[in-house]
Length: 167
Length: 378
Image 1 (cartoon, rainbow over the protein chains, first blue to last red):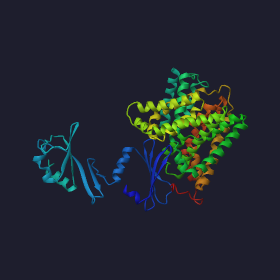
Image 2: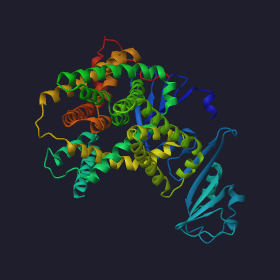
Image 3: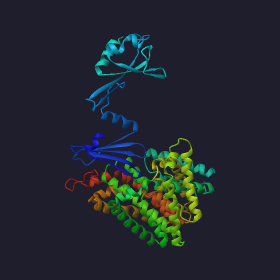
Image 4: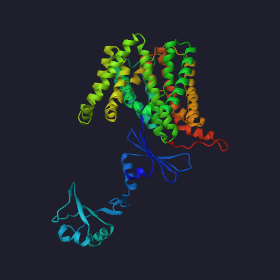
């Protein structure tokens, strides 16, 4: 929403086709996005001085992924980690990572592993078989095969991997 | 009943094939109908059920067109819409009319052929722009508004041709009355309609279906053209939640319209012999006259005759509206000419839509004038 004041974003509703958004960057390249009635999203980019735009057609799902990348939620190569950057909050970066519980940790609780005091990360969810436990209590006992979702900064997550998730 | 099932099955197969090859299905539905009907194997005859389904197809096609008709947006784009629209209208109506008249059709028949000759297929134009990824070209917007203008002309045409044998004053009074009722319902019932459409049960679909059928039968009862009134219903309901109505009317439109095309083919009578030279000449002229209007539009709107080639390539196909005109007002020989024209132009149009950009590039060899910047610069 902020950016609208910086660059001229034009939006047009085209009868029968859908909605078009178009803007020209400072360097003179043009980007146009069409949300078509058929549900697909077409993105065109036109480099300054070129005459033929190149196009990509996306499903809504793919468009959302592209949107996440562009807004700064960098998706790391491993699919189980997402980093979110809040540009308005002094470039605050938070990473959410998933891990599989190994034998070494099975049978112990969040409390006696001292996860937060030792590493700084917080376990926000556990996925066990087909159900999810959101905000597990400190007395929560891990089992082999649990998938835990952990939130923290990159350094804290490294410490968590080193000190808790050891083999 | 078996007839319609057979027809639907043929359509299903044709739909799968044409979608797979990404070519327009309409000409093949008509050809399928011709093959099954009177002029072909005579396997299917037009019975009560077929006629009812066909009529539903026509009514839902027009209702859908009404939903897209947002008058305030046309008003906002008036100058561009008017220039290109008037060129398209004059060039194609005149060529179509004189061609038909010179081949010996009566004045009224020639007017019907000219209208079908003039009106391009909105569905084909838009599908080809999306599928060939041309939406960003500035000609795309011209084509889209051209289709809107053609829809408006069709409405005027429907009004004029159906007023024929009535007292024009009473006729227009009746139309004004129905319009007032429709807009009053849409205006005062807006909140209620929106809450109704929001539901996830059968109510939204049932309401959409009932609203369209009620409007159509009420119009027939008081003697105003139901075709015009369902367009008006669409336009009135578009002031509430057009997207929801589109979503709920789409299943009816999609199924019934296919039946409409195939039954149109079934009822075509070629047994009296056809004048192939005439049919071929009119179909060829249909391609040529859109070229003339396209190039003129390119020169007037985009200051480039080459831009006109792009407009031409995407508007050659005649389709659903031409068939609608033929089904409503065409005598058997007129319907046969229009059917042939739709088949030829829509198949030719599928190729030109794909290759006209290449043709245009080929025409701009080094040393000739450079092509225009593609973005719309709105």
